[in-house]
Amino acid sequence: MGAEGNLGWVRALLREEAGRLGLREVMGVAPFSSVYGALMPVQQARLRELSGAGFDEMIRDGSVVSIAFAYPEYAVDSIAVGSEGGYDKERWNVYAREYIRLNDALNEASTRIASEIGGVAIPATTEGAAAEISHVEDYYPLVVSHRVAAEQSGVGWRGKNELIVNPGFSCAIRLASVLTTLPMRRTPPTTMGCGDCHACMDACPCLRNKERLRNYREQCRLYIVSLGLVSDVCGKCVKACYRESVYRDQFKL
Image 1 (tube, one colour):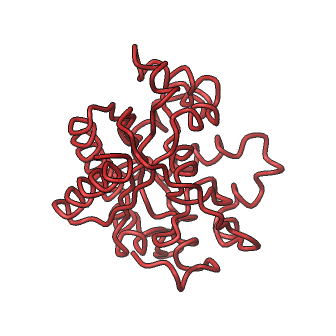
Image 2: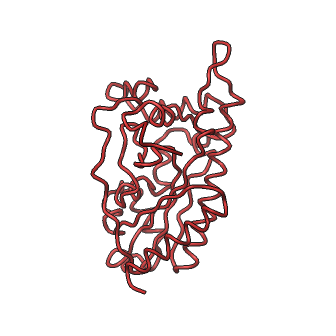
C-alpha cells in the first residue's frame, strides 16, 4: 500500500472508531526515534520496555501514531462553575466522567489500530494516578508521554499549561499512542504556538507562578486530589484555553 496509503488506512480506522463512539478525532505520525530522543531517561526506559524485542527495529524504521479524541463542548463548560461561594462539584463531575469515557474510548481505538497494523498500543493515562502516588515525580517512570508524541507528530503544540493545544480543539483533547514498524508517512510538527496568550495562566495560580514555585506540577497534583472529583482532573486551564485564548474563535468542539 505504501507509506501514504498506510497513513490513510490508519486515519480511516481512527475515524471509524470515533464515529462509532460519537467523538471527534485527530491523528499524527512521528518517527519513533525522535519521540524516544525527546523523552526523559526514565520514560525512555519505559518505551524500550514496551517495545520489547522489536526496539532496535523501532529505532531504525518505526513510527509513533499519536491519536486524540476531543471532549464535547458541554463537558468543558461544566468545569469550575461557581456556586454559592464555591464550585458546583456535581456539574464539574460531568467533565470528570468525560475524562473516563475518553480514556476508555482511546484504549479501545488504540487496541484496535495496534491489532490491525501489528503494533503496540500505549493506552491513555488512567484516572486514579494522582492520588496513588506520593509525589508527581513518582509518576514519570510509569508512563510514556503521549504529549511528546503528539507534539512531534503535529497533533498540536505544547501550550503554556504544558498540555497539547490542537489548532481545532484547543487543549480539550485526550491522547493515546500506537507504536508500529508499518511504513507510514510522517506528519510534521506544527509551527503554531501560544504567542503572547496567557489565558491558561490567568486561570490557574500554579501556572501563573510556575517559575517561582519549587515544583508547580506537584502543586497541581495536590490541588487535583483536593477537589475530590470522580477522576483526577481539574481542567480550569483547558476551559480558559478554549473560551478565553487568542484562538477562541478558531476552536470548535
